[in-house]
Image 1 (tube, one colour):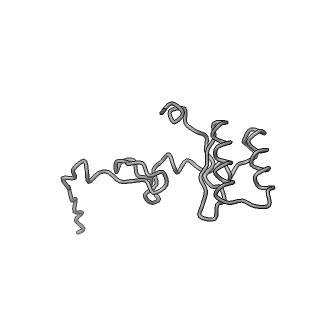
Image 2: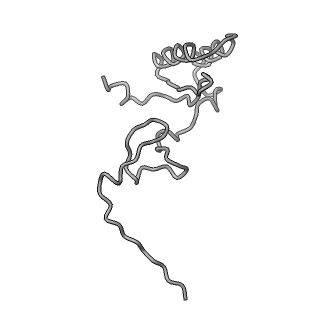
Length: 112
């Protein structure tokens, strides 16, 4: 006969908080994505995987960026500034290459 053991913990609110390793925002345990410490918002996907579905203006900006002979942190920051003015954003890796293109939430635009 098998018995299952249920452990109930008296977790405090402070113990329930974790920080998303992508965006750095505090989350509750119920918000944790199933594949590591990434919140659901950060796991929405990368629009770089479906460039053909993006508006032509965004595609043109990305292709112009990739056509440059050099890219680094400065160029990636300029790309991010341009994308954010059009309602998109991304980040970049240690190599300076842009990653995680996403549409900016309307709520993020109103945080000023």
